Length: 313
Image 1 (cartoon, rainbow, N blue to C red):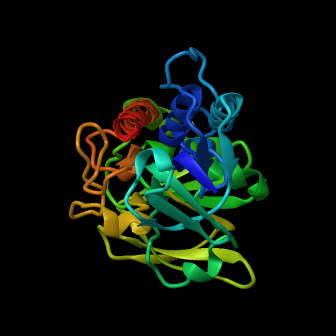
Image 2 (cartoon, rainbow, N blue to C red):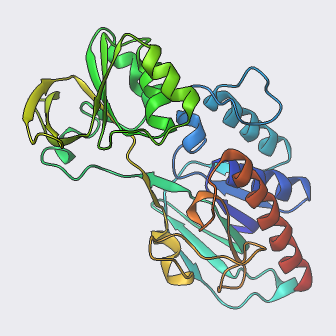
């Protein structure tokens, strides 16, 4: 099916792009590879998005954005985008599409695409990790925390996501082990204070996970103290990883330029070297990755896409 604009990604950048495109009257499709809401949908509470003085739940915020997009006529499909390719040159009034978006189940064409597929969680790369993904290893405490009621879980990471999710898990878990490879956290002072004040959190700094073990599901991990070299076996039933993100760039890698970390290089108007392809949100190189900056990217990307379409009649 042909569209004026296809948006890939259902996070704040993608949703904003879809809202702007739909409201402007363009025939718009949003394809969400993550199944709804991007990274914010995994956050228990969001306190730094304007308009919500007491915070708002991540899933609730993204549901509101999706409802707004649908109200403006945007069609939403929950599929994984495999590849985006250039088709015949956009022929303007004829409506012939310039880009093809392929998923595992369908192919869609559009005159312009806003790619806002965000990032993917980084893994530890240790023995046993792949075997226990979704069998005790999770990247989303909000999604899976309730499954570990009265159990011991570990959280790996030192940023705000790791610390805030460690605090969130104390609602369910008997004990939370917070594991960080450095002796100081990268998180802000507010989250550090919450961790320090929570008696259910045991902090293991200057410590790394060496391996993961279990039977049908995860039952334990081995950790190494970087100061002493001591290796210990710990019994845990859940392992939550917050060790960084990787740009989800594969579907468009051949159509864009990237930096040494794989993030897409865009112009100020979110355009790329491929005509009709605009990139927004966390997948592009930028100094700050927040919901607020993603929303701005999405608005600029569609403004540029609209200008691109109008110039071609």
